[in-house]
Image (cartoon, rainbow, N blue to C red; front, side, top):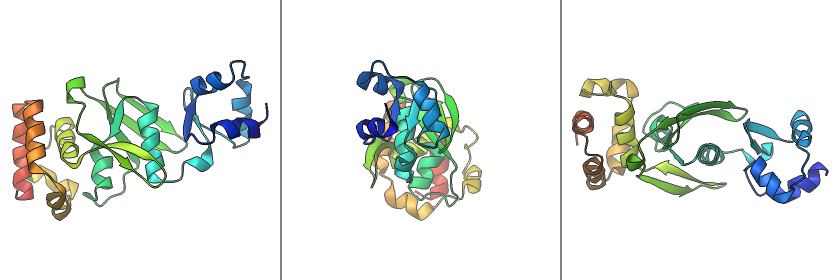
Length: 204
C-alpha cells in the first residue's frame, strides 16, 4: 500500500487509531506507519493514535484531539477559562476532565493533561461547533466549579487575585441559576464555601 491510498481513506478523520486502520485493512503492515512518520506524512500522538499534520491547525482541532485521546473527556479548567476569555494569559497545556484514570501526554501538537472526576460529577459540558472541528468543553458554570473542585487553595476571596480573572466577562456569561443547580447536584459543603468566596470576589 502507498501513502496516497491510505490517506484517501482516512483523510477525513483528524485523528485515527490502529483500530481504525485494522477495520479498513486487516492485514495492514504497521511498519508503514513508522516509515510515514519519518517522512513527515504522519504524526504519532500517543500509543496507537495518529494524525495527518495538515489536519491539526486550529485551537478547535486540538480540543477535538483532547476529546479523542482519552475518553470520555471534556476540556475544562484553565483551558476553558482562556476559551471564554476569562483569563488573559495563553494556556499551553490543554486540560480536560475525565472519568478514566488521570493522564498526561506530550505530543507533537501540544501537551494534554487529564484530571479524573467521579462519574456522577461528569456533567455540565457542551458541544461547541468550531470552524474546523466540534469539541466538548465545560459550560461556563461548570468551568468555575471544576476549578474550585480541583484547586482547594482557592478558599478566600483574596486567593483569586493571582488568576487575573476578567470579572466583566464572567458576570456577563454566567447563569447563576444553572450554577446553583449544579452545586445542589454535587452536594458538597466545601465546594459551596469555595463558591461563596469566589462569588464575593466577583461581586455577585
